[in-house]
Length: 618
Ligand code: GCB
Image (tube, rainbow, N blue to C red; front, side):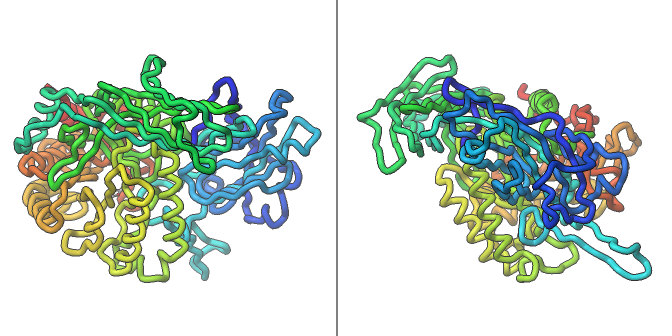
């Protein structure tokens, strides 16, 4: 799916701003056809934003079910001959969309974009002004990802109608129109999609296969080797109902470095293919981004898509980017901030990337859902390596109850999961920052029912993309896990000394080392510790350290880090978490999860300086 861009034949109109908003307290609006008339008794609401933290009362903040958004938009006369599309960056989680009282689309899945063509609808209307209404539900159940269920309780202990949204994941169920809403135009015959794959020839940064044990070893080769290659083949495949006349590759300065025109383009029923070659390409490398563009010129339409040239290989002990073994240092993160919730905040994103660079991080995982397109574009530009995760989270019970036995995760969940993989791939396929797909976080992969489920999930991901490795992020133990035969890299979340043997940092080294060795013996694949961390209250100090102090977080993380430096198959450390974030209320959550190395307001705790010291190249 292409991102809306502006050029001489395409226009974009932003529908962000203040919309009318109404909470559907009895979840009756759809039945009563609220969409047919302008909404009554509305309050102002910001888009993009989560609606939750903008309210001052619990009833509105915690509303379970539908909320309604409404605004007007105008189609300028100059758009008369254009194809007009309405596009949502995301709507969390399920949305019915109406224009002038008529349903134009429905979308399920809160973290990926969707769009609908409006040309016919607006053409039929004599008015320039149109009413856009969105009925948005934040209910999570077992037919969707993330999974959840609405719990109702009755009896004399509970007020009438008592219910709440239960989730089995650790972030607040922020809801709303979280990402930009846009109208855009294309010519009537238009370019539908562009897939760009690259193949690097003659890598010259091949390293000498010495054993890489410590983070320092990786930093040495990072300094020694400059990624370079003799040439690169760029395979471009375009889906279009406009005739494609020219496909070219532009460098960062806009110079054409390869071009194929009409008669050399392979054509087959709406699909156009070309292979272009770039000599001595600038490679897209971690921390050293270089972005080329493919420009597709049609008879009527034109689209320019950025991409990077880079090579990825995975061995039994290494993750190799452009011939150079790569060590993931960084975080699991969240799109989360005060007031905005999960709403896109471009200023916050810039601060985040500046902090990631300051601390010496080279990568992050989009735990636990694909982040905004604007976020991914920044990662491309900043050379930040990304593990892109589908919103498959909340598929595990900690009390021994089964999730994959049939009555919870079911065929609908699976189908939705497969749809979301496809939609994530379609959105992010051309981003060089994405080096690996994560198809789930902490699912109960020790259950028998998880086996057929993840066989389908992993093969779908491979069918979609034959260029990137895949992973599943585990909570299951090494003996129980039943699915890692299908992944390329084993990612494990571990909290030794926190959720087990709480406060005892002296057990961490032994426990993590023993376990990592067993995982590697079992699967012979490289391992990333994709989460480890301790809740830490900023400004809370104690000597000797106790849990929740800044000193404890430093000691805790260091115990893990020491072990990573002793195992040559460990290829990364992603601390949980980048910064503090909001969760549902819970006995072990004091206004959210405090495992951040930065506060929710993006200021450093002591561990940030400790990690900066470890991660920064010398
Ligand atoms: C995990 C989850 C993450 C939680 C974290 C924690 O394993 O993947 O979503 O926030 O643990 O802090 O408990």
